[in-house]
Image 1 (cartoon, rainbow, N blue to C red):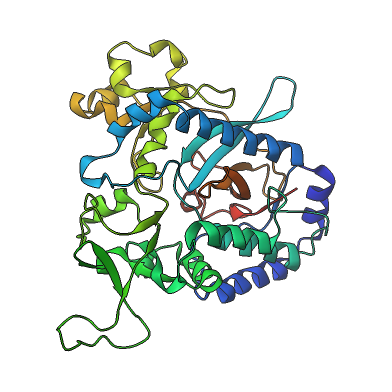
Image 2: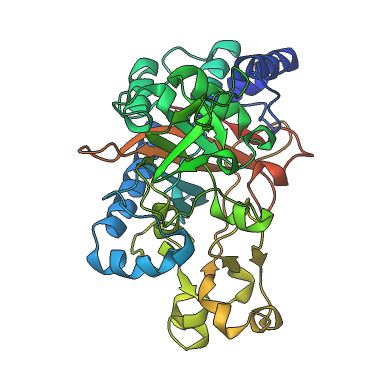
Length: 413
């Protein structure tokens, strides 16, 4: 995107440095990074990243500040997963943009998806620093947003995730975290914030409190028969995705609807409130046209989609890692969805994203994720970017694993 930086990096690329990067990331995250890391960072004009960060904030406020949307999005939260004491706004936002070429040849962002759920905030900060160091990138290049540096970034994350609590009483919860590809991020978060990562199915409920078992010594029973090594949980950094719990039929030791005496860093309701469900509600130059499948069958919103069905995408509102997306859905595929389930699907205009990153293997697309945090009694703030490079229909790293100069990477401006 910045031609002189792009050409310079391609010219002096050394595969030994790339291997050094992979080895360092494994070492600093205390595990093997199982998803593909691209051989190259991306270089963007500050103005382009600023426009994406601004657009993502505007989209978020369109939803959160709208009483109509907030009222209607309540129905998007399944009854069995509706958690009491919802926070007035999400603590985390991620907004994904693809890049298109306008008629005048300029590059502009288009929304892919937005989600009120945390991403790999810890891992991405470490990757960005290591890419800069190992590849000896220009020292003027920056990767944090909002004038943050490394210290300021982690201070902000500590404020949002840990708050005023003892870190020992704050946990990152996930489903079988040792088997998740995001385990490198969990380890970085543990090391920087001093919190534990806990399998959500292994929490212990006593009354209206949740506890976890210490992992540094054997469990033992006290005289009352209660676990003597149980640690009370004051705040939960929520990384458990309901879609995965449903698919794996995870049995929880508590009910989300219980009035638990615990705070949430990333209240679970927001995962549903701001998601694919939000897309038809948005009105912004960066947003592709979208309509609920149930409304499309009812004749509402048909004019919002292009006439050419090859430019349509069918998406389930709640899925995991891109599963269930159908490109160019046929009428038969649409009709196969039972009428009672059609409100859980979205028809969306498909964007033609431009391959704007020049690599030795040809021009490559880049999907840019803006990561935000929203502390209590403060403003929504863009803090960091994450880029996924790819050449196929799907930009996730799982869909580009057999290619080179694709995968997860960092953005510099």
